[in-house]
Each structure stands twice: as C-alpha cells, then as structure tokens.
Image (cartoon, rainbow, N blue to C red):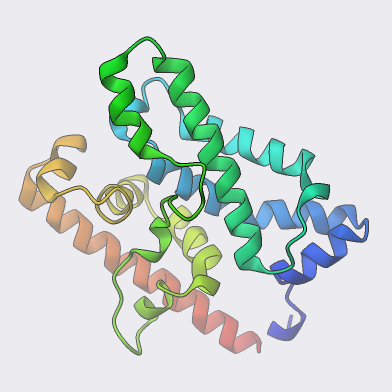
Amino acid sequence: MPASELPTVSGLLAQARGGDQRALDRLFGMCRNYINIVARSQVESWLRAKVDASDLVQQTLLEAYRDFPRFHGATEAEWLAWLKRILAHNAADFVRRYHQTDKRQAGREVALVNSDDSQAPDGLANLPGDDETPSQALLRKERELLLADALARLSPDHCEVIVLRNLQRLSFDEVGQRMDRSRPAAQMLWMRAMQKLQETMAGNLDKSGAES
C-alpha cells in the first residue's frame, strides 16, 4: 500500500468521530504499544510487585475508549497528550490505592506521575540520536508511535534496559542492580539494545520509503 494511503492518527480520528467503528478500533490498536511503553516508564521496578504496567494500560485504554466522545483534538500530538493525561491520572490512583497507609513510600511515589500533562514524563523523546541517522527520528514527535512499535519488537532484556536507562533515567549501576547484572554487563547490554533499536527503526523507515 502506498504511504499516502496508510492510515494516519488524524485521519482515523476524523473517521472515528464520524461514527466509523473500525477506524476507532484501529486507532486504539495503533496506540497500545505507545501506552505500554509510557506506562512502563512511569512504574518503577520496586513498585511493579504491586502495580503491573499492563493493568495501567488496560485501564487507560478502557477509559479513553469510554470517553472518546469528549476528546476534541484533531492531531496525533493532541491525541497522545490526552492518552498520557489519562495514564498519569490512573497511575496516581494506583499509587494511592496500594500505598495510602505508607507515608514514607507515598512521598517517593508522588514524583512518579503528575496529572498535569506538561509535567508528565515524555520519555519517548529522551532517547539519544545523531543528525542524519535513524536515531534522529526517535526525537521527533511524529515518530513516537513508530518508536513504541520498535521497542515492542525487541527482546525483553533489550526493551527493559532501554526503559530503565533512557526512560527512567537510571545510572548504569542502578540498571545493573535492577537486572541482576554487573555495571559493565549492563552497559554492554544497553549498547546492543540501542543498536538493535536503531536497526529496527531504520528498517521501518526504509519500508515506509519503499511504499511511498
């Protein structure tokens, strides 16, 4: 299919608002990996024993689906920002629900999320890139969905090390502790993961160009 005929978020939004159920379902399908990655970036490893990121994803998508008639934006950026606001609100609710009696932990958890989207983590834009390479695309807003899809295709260890290092911004010492590896091993894993991610992104961009 030519690139010009591929569905866009803005196009699907317009169709869904016009009552096209298939467009609405496709719109949410396109954003599932994105919401999953953002959720993982907001749920610290020490909290995962009680809060599964998949629970946040499911709750967020259910609420967004229910409240879709209230969304009045028309662009991909507005759509993703709206989804992140719902996710941040749900994450804060999960924190309060599971730790409302633990004052010491609560102080630490509040910093994880913020219902104000201007303060919410925008982790997918934090991955490093170089000019004129596929990595640069990782910094562009219009590539966030492609990036999330590429991360979802990585091995669990490769995805995890990128989430910890780039999205949660942990030191390599902390990454190693979380993944039960030495610091040098964590650094090596991260380098390989970033290389694989760039290769995956490059393949997506080449495919897109071939279809255009």
